[in-house]
Image (cartoon, rainbow, N blue to C red):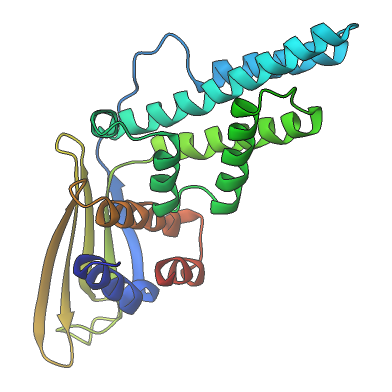
Amino acid sequence: MSTEKIEKLRSFLLDNIDSMEVDSSGGHYPDSPDFDLYARDYLNFAEQELALHLEATSDQARIRHLTNCVTNLKRAMDCQLDTFFYAYNLYQIFHKKNLKFEKKLEFLKACDIFNSRSLVRLNTLRNSMEHSYEVPQIEDIEVYCDLVAAFIAVLQRVISSTTRSEMYINTGLGKDDTTLHYRDGYLQIDYRKEIPEIRIGWHKYALESQEEVKEEMTATMDNPEEFAFFFKVILLMQDLDHYASYGYIYQQLSS
């Protein structure tokens, strides 16, 4: 069930999104874990095993290379998930709560980071290959490999994102309506990794009431639903800068 904070933030954004423009973004980049191997290493190992499968001359060798491929694809996914959570200082929270793979995917879905249908397909393939003790089919392996590669790329893009941004609301009407491009408000987003928490605040001059409206809200992992929605807002506002239309952002916020 949606919380009061979520609905208040959603309402503000839907009311103002078409007059927002990104003025600046910055802050720190997330940290990287000190692993010996990373997701792309395991993906590379998987692709090598897939190539060896095609060259193998015996059934036993082909089966060995296919199962090795699956193992490395699973490691690639797990590693990229842990890298993502580490980067945003969420790793220990998930680790202490002993949240499993499916719960981690649910969090990504709530943040709207990865297409939900692809996540379902990805998890179904993973569970089938892990628990059925059957020799995987080459067609499933190829689909799985493509999905894992896309999964890694999407999470890497999120990991590389900045964690602070400011947006100004430019309606052209404010206290001084003779100024054509008067900035009559702003939205500020700040991911505070050390806590971790997401702080979102705004300041808006209401022309009709002649009042200034200020609001600041904070989301932490004490309420995962709020935290995930706030994280989704971070990504949508970053997309608004370069990669998405106002209509798309409006639709995503409404859903």
